[in-house]
Amino acid sequence: MKPEQLTMTEGPMEDSTSEFVLRLRATERPADPLVSCLVPAFNEEGNILPMLETLHTLMKDLHLRHELIVVDDGSSDATVERVMSVIDRLPVTLVQLSRNFGKEVALTAGIAEARGDLAVLIDCDFQHPPELIPSFIEQWRLGYDMVYAVRADRNDETLLKRAFTYVFYGLLNFGERNKIPENTQDFRVLDRCLLEALNSMPERNRFMKGLYNWVGFTRRAMRVRTDPRRHGTSSFNFISLLKLAATALTAFSNMPLRLWTVIGGVVSLSSIAYALYIVVETLLFGNNTSGWPTIVVAITFLGGVQLLSVGILGEYIGRIFTEVKQRPAYFVSRVTRSSTTLPHDGDTR
Image 1 (cartoon, rainbow, N blue to C red):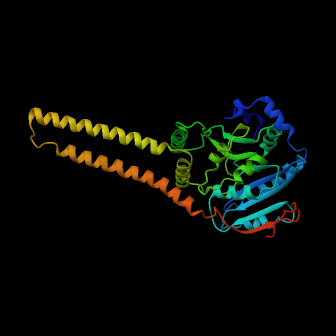
Image 2 (tube, rainbow, N blue to C red):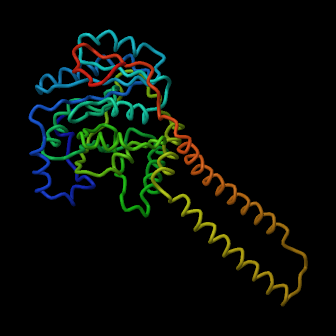
Image 3 (cartoon, rainbow, N blue to C red):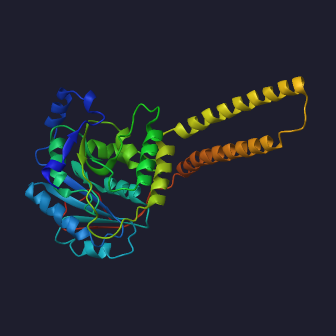
């Protein structure tokens, strides 16, 4: 990415963060921090090695101690084999999940494994330009606890996906005081305080962009362009997007429930008004037994509204059902660490 393609933009917490607070946070930054680079991977055999080499070279050029954490989310290709081929040469920690849990859970597993003073979260398909990491870390040194990427535009997406995204964020943030920034990406730098905050949150239905925003702390947004994937195709399709949107809405917004409460109220008032109209018409003009089409339309409409309302309630109840079972969010089948990584206190795996 060319330098002119990177611009700064105001983060959602930045206006309320005084310069004094930022200076205070900056003085707390360690002079020689350990950087944890978190790379979730699912069937990324063509991208994983170039990304690890790029991150390692970048950190060496910055003279930063670092660890490269790869979370394999149940890959069925040669991703694990490729990582194992360099594990004795690079400071890599390979976390293999017991099956495919999804990217949100893979990020959660990586955050739990990170030992650094800060963590760099980046996809391994090179859509997030690694060369921007120094700029992110510089903002962290200035006192920002979270530095995150915002898409500069969505011109590479279909009109349907752009419209869906617009509606999604509108519903998600409508009436909410703590609004989730639009068009954010998982590409970000997180301070240790955010890592610990995220690790303390036990919910199983994970929408990471919402969790990053909910915990607060000082933050800075950076507007970046999104590059094409270097190899392969994304496994995140429109169905996956719909599922993630449902998780986000039920986890961070009551708007669907409020919306259908309003719709139910409007329908009920309309029904009462129509009933009064029928009573008055019958008293004044009699009843000629007409209105069969009106009855059919009314029953069909009200039945559809009720079924849709039950479906929305079912989504929330399903989330509650998942949470009350208190199953772990994921299982780790194996953790393999390079001999060049720092010792892990108390680890017996």
